[in-house]
Amino acid sequence: DAVAAGLEALERAPAVHADAAALAGCWGLVVALGFAPALHRCAACGTAVDGALAFSAPLGGALCPTHRRGAAHLSKLSPKDRDALSALLVGELPDPALDARHARAHRRLLLAFVRHHLAEDRPLPAMAFWDAQSWNAASS
View 1 (cartoon, rainbow, N blue to C red):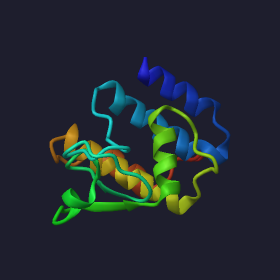
View 2: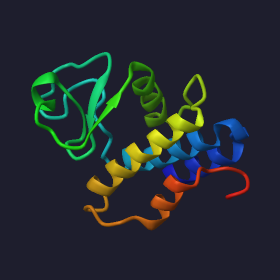
View 3: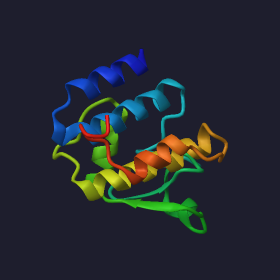
View 4: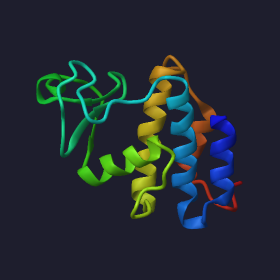
């Protein structure tokens, strides 16, 4: 169901939202498999977090100030980027639309998360290609 929903959303998405629709579809698969990242609570201890996030793909998402100290591979998400990721996780398109720079950042975040949690740190050539080449009508 998650694959079908993602493909349908990608087909219906206007060109300006193609990258976001692809991201939402991929995150939908991650969520359906039970690997949704933590965004509102620390992935390590469950403490509520808000505002800008320290996001650790290997540790499963947002980290509180205590757990982000010394954590490797942290991504910093502004409140706007956190809101965009929240929308993508539930299959919605972020508002405002992701610009090219933010779409690339979200692809890298997804790739790091999937590589660690689903691919056991093996390379993922198709996702690496997508990271290097944005999703658009010419690439589909």
